[in-house]
Length: 268
Image (cartoon, rainbow, N blue to C red):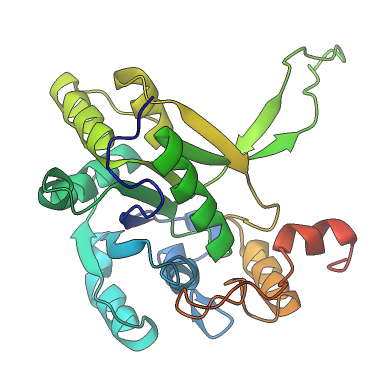
């Protein structure tokens, strides 16, 4: 498939951060992305890593309306320029993505945005390298998702299942902007609600979606203990998941991936 824009080597990407969930399994009444993690709020960590990339030219943060005041105060306190656009989400993940895409539609249609990268704000440890990988793959192929291989599944009766490959899918996920917008417009017309971005693209487009290697350290904050694990992972990585990228101008300086730390046993 030919890329839908002229220069896949330097795509202009819009970052959509989904922060409109509740996450009550963390044991808090507060939205989990607003919980403190190592001196900052959860959602600001991956926001910062993604925005190190020069390809990320605009940012949308999708929130619950009841969180607006706290979110805006956090952005003002913890997020560096450029500005973040705050959008109220829908009543589902798909609905929140659709609200973001409607906000981005003028920029997509005018050619100012080539790729949309969508990320769960509850995954604070997605580093700059992972964002770069999915954006680059989406620019080349049309879509990209990070995956981690899982062991073979076993049925309850002990018989081993037979899928060739079982993977766990992570975010960020990235897609060519115009096909993505067209797919969600058609989904809205049909009343279709997808489980994730890739499912909507698969239903309404023939855009190929490439798998890129995920990171074992790219955990999702779901339970209270996840916050403790995330802080330990950040500490082991010296609080820096940018790969040494200084506002996207410096080369990587040998930072270690969180997955490497996890599998090495250093977090035991």
